[in-house]
Length: 64
Image 1 (cartoon, rainbow, N blue to C red):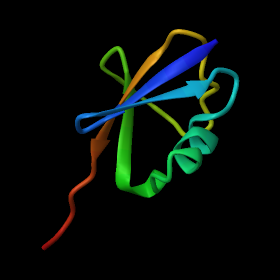
Image 2 (image 1 turned 90 degrees about the vertical axis):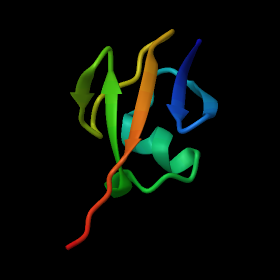
Image 3 (image 1 turned 45 degrees about the vertical axis):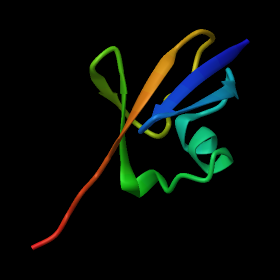
Image 4 (image 1 turned 180 degrees about the vertical axis):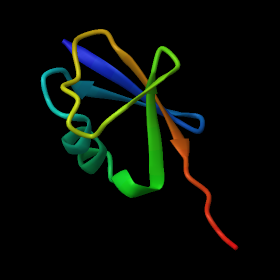
């Protein structure tokens, strides 16, 4: 039972059933630095990750 989290060219397998926030902390990604999508739809940090989902992380770039 796992979820795949993809950021850049890296893939992580995470245990299903945890929140996105907890999963990001586990793989050492700052939640404020990425947007998470599932099937092209943005999801929030309190989303519970379910088995066999693929989550794509997109880096947030800011500046003036």
